[in-house]
Image 1: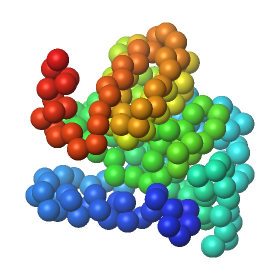
Image 2: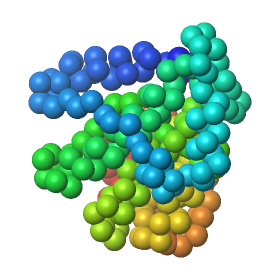
Image 3: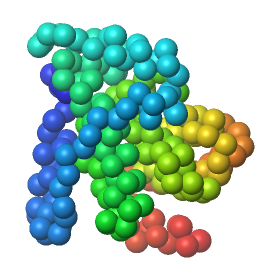
Image 4: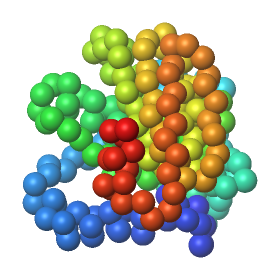
Length: 212
């Protein structure tokens, strides 16, 4: 997945995460898995069929080609396989936790997914990986409540809210945002809580704010 030179959603993002895992000593404590591709059925829980078809049909077939889905979201030849596995990683994470094989899971994936809406891409995202995982937990495991917490400079929590409202379960969102952009509550059964933050805040500052 290479959306072009100087694009901020670059392979180096995952290299930086991997380096930080090693430096922190966490690398030796985790188990790595190869994510499967998400299925069409799993995507259609949160995305319109026409939109899923658009992403598949837009995928470049040759190296060096770019297909711009919106103003800042581009596909290269490797984007579609990467996007399918990124969403599939969320499915696998749910399965690993719900089966009690692991108590927590972290998906180190590209492209990201929490900005994509039900019928359009946004913010470098094609499929809403977060919503795909949440919808799978609800549909496949009979959960009645899901909490989604989003840490971002710009808040697009409404994207996740939009794509899961059709699930008709209780979904609570908590979003930390820095840029002053406010999300809107899509409607029941979704609950959306926004936490304003400022550059330079420490983890201790954030914890203090949460505790009130």
